[in-house]
Image (tube, rainbow, N blue to C red):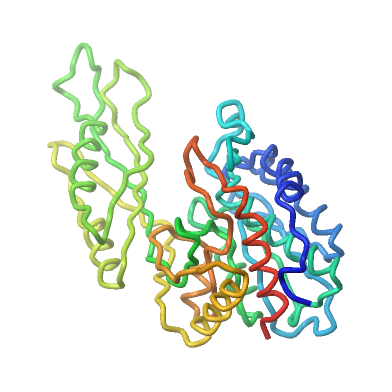
Length: 377
């Protein structure tokens, strides 16, 4: 049987996806993430998988691990790795409603990465319907905190990946449909500026504003950005009363580094921040780090070649690319486990109110995943 004979219908995949997108699941809302895991767990059970709920920790939601029955169960196989949390708060559907517009479909989390996660299930279902066995046992792991750097799940991801021969990650495809074979390092930092409080109306000069100090720090931090490393301040919180000179302001910084030397440079630069204003001080706390995943692992190269050849047989090309956007593939690739990322849907607008997928990419990408599942050994 050829892969072209497997049945994939974009409308059917979208019908399965719509309840997932309607179940908004921002990272920090553990109840919302739990509802999403309930939906995914039921769909996995319908595939015949044995589904295990793994309790969350550090204030994050639960994860799901599902194993597809296989004669070689317990031997190293294929790990399908995805996250079910999104950056969109509950209520985003009011602005970014599920809708079709030409060949596109819009919705929060649809592109990053519920669409890719559903492709995994669609590929497995099509293989089952055609009575085509996977060559290796298949495990699915859905995690709950990828969008904030996977601080509570990194150990789970690495431990599960170490039991497998391959890791497939259906994060969004590249703009040209290519896949990801390397990812740059991503590091996060929490910064706090500390000032001296005073009454803003009666004794303004007696105070030292933590907010003003943070404003100086933000300009300095973002001013250090180059091609690599880059620096971006994404969250700022400070002050409690307009008539009080703020004594505390906090911010979160994300850096991207293409090389280990660039990552060390970023770390030194952040550790070296010093207050500018009199009466102020700055503290920096390192956060989660996604390690550098470099290309060159022989097993990874063979995995990409297998995917490239399958795609060519299906009538399209997939290029191999490095990406500045982090994913849980950073962890598995950095461990040396053959990993192929960016296997998900084509689209654009991740993390924005224009997030969408290209509908025609659903059967194409699902068929590629099915081919990998059927042939990897």
